[in-house]
Image (tube, rainbow, N blue to C red):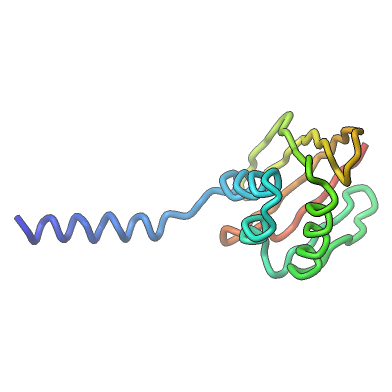
Length: 133
């Protein structure tokens, strides 16, 4: 009986260690960290090779984790009331498309709406494309 319990426990632990989070879970956890202004947790879901693009112009606005950390550290420091609400979410394979309503950006009272396309690989966000109105 003891051996069966040990095998069961080993299988349970192995399953838990091998369980990968879905793209949606990664993006949601990243958004939760964003809303909590928690730069360390936010960055834990960002790939070292992150690239952030402006959707319309295809312009690369952020390249690499260090640049991303710098941009979001400054944003969090200047935005004590920053909060994003998801108006609509579509999940398609490793892509998560969020229509976001953001308030408190850089201390502004003006809300903005963005559509962000997150691409996830190996439990990290490696590309974000940003659509602006």
